[in-house]
Image (cartoon, rainbow over all chains, first blue to last red; front, side, top):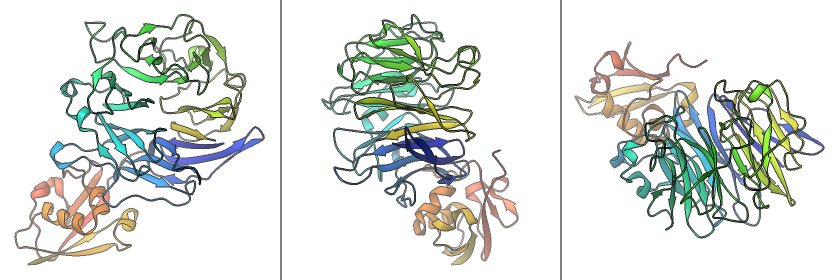
Length: 354
Length: 95
């Protein structure tokens, strides 16, 4: 399994399996890597590594590599740049999501709130004008990390669901040609109206592996499920040690199965320092702690793009990174973890590929 | 016509064909904005490292016109003199 690890101060990869892990030297330095992705480019050849970088001095970039990070490409004009008429500038590439519906298709969630599409494996992107011109956009607010589209879910029928902080969940039924808010039932704790049409601070959403109308959301306070593609949501956080967190992962093949990483919102640490995943096998009806091998005195946090799950020969493999520079991997659906890397800069993004 | 020389930091040499000093010809009365437009036209990657899509000099980039940082002059409207030296540097930031 390959793992790409984006941190606050550089980029690494790791290669390994149950026998152990080999972590690269830093592939890139002096930049943060808020987003990484392995993009399938067709039947043959390795996946392309696409990364969203930001130099504190020289600004954001999207870089691609077809040799696991040995060499990199970037168009001279940049992969993601706002058209002149928008009077906007890219601050950070928050998320890169390969679209399994077509090899080489990649979506990017960007700050300021915007969605971008590539059809050439992440070399160049086009701004989604429908979302950029949405009448709600001027009223979307920045989350603590900034105003960005951070979660992108391409669905099998050319519909899409996205999430942003703080705008909430939006969906499109027409290949991203138009967008509507989809937040009914998700509570906000920072505004007078607890159930607004939009404006929720949704931290992450994920789609069920079997029932594509079933979505899971880790909200800024509360975990939710939708059974109708986002039309309505219901709380499913009963039984969790904390209702806050940044991560929700849906099992890649099994129905009703998902994981969250609870964080205590009064400390921003795992509850009692126990860094653990919590798993549901009944779509949020109940939860149980998993993660043997994870530390029990770990005062850190796991950011939204720093966790990933993939199907590895019929089993869910989970990998996640922490803000104190560790990367943990499980090859048995989260039951047990081994440490892939430690003492890295704080981990912002992690993606695995079989 | 006037001539100006832009000095490029080592970190950006890959975006200037490996050259650390770039000479540009400009019209009389050209401003720093005109000069950076010419930089971006000839070296697009270098241009967007220095300025963002709106044309603003990036927050942690300093552009010195002679001995003075351009923000302490007239910013992008600073007039460029003949034989002017312009230096691009990353500011002291980070940690």
